[in-house]
Length: 193
Image (cartoon, rainbow, N blue to C red; front, side):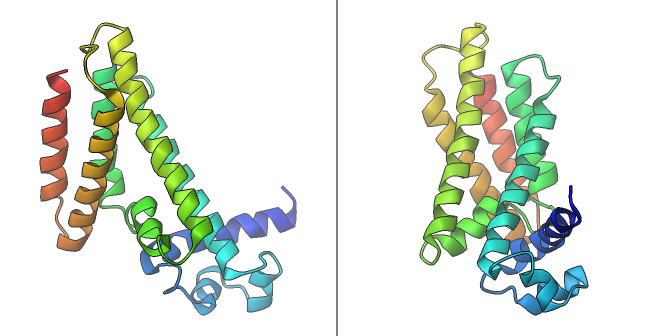
């Protein structure tokens, strides 16, 4: 990495949690300057706009969550174990996370009416998340672990939306109780596959 690329990556990493917590509109350049100890020119010398920083922060945060999910399922032998590992990752790492919770939920809520480019990025990430779940159901069906009549796509939509709703509730109520309940309900359903 060149010095410029390292500085750019540093700005993204230092800004990501702030933007995830405060939102795109709620985060000022002053916030980013404080987080990075860079002057305004140091930030804008690497990015054309605050919006560009926000998009890169979203990409960074979603890659981090996706990497965590991939790591959570690596080494698991069955589709059931992998789905359980996904649920446990959301319960223990995403919902209570100090980085502000789920970036899909946070950025998506703000961008749905105000930022078409970011909205499309969030939509793509939602689709990717649902496809991961659906593929695991299909994997379980292919191995004979799950009943072939289970609709993997439908279950993926249900699991994803229940998780996101539980993350929202966890963050607002400052309690993992709802998240734990949803994870238990989903695990019970997976057990019935």
